[in-house]
Length: 140
Image (cartoon, rainbow, N blue to C red; front, side):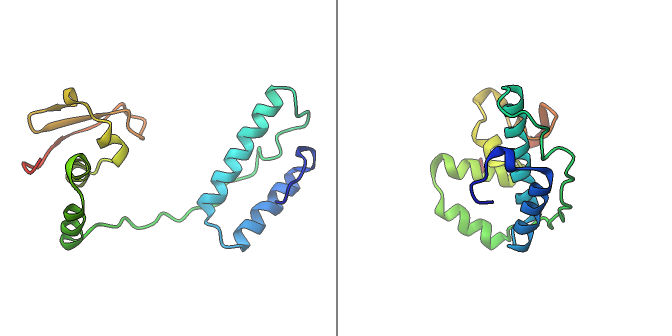
């Protein structure tokens, strides 16, 4: 992309940028994320009345992203992971492995979110405020 002025960043320029990034081997998801950031930047500039053209990213379709297969740790990998962790990090890892929670979800839990062997996750990445109610392994 170089260091272009905002006025030089036309729709054609954005499409060329996308093609260059694809040819350079960037993942489609990374390119989509870059274009999303650029679109947001232009929206802010337009709202601030600093950029007086149309958003050059608006209307550019996202690249198709192949969903990757879900990977799972083997029992041996889980054992090696847990051997390297201690304290809260180990407990969070066990919670994630037991429930499928994201690290950020599990590490932000508070005591009131755990009752007995049940845990409730709030503020999850999904749209639902409560992800699920799970049974936790007794090793916690």
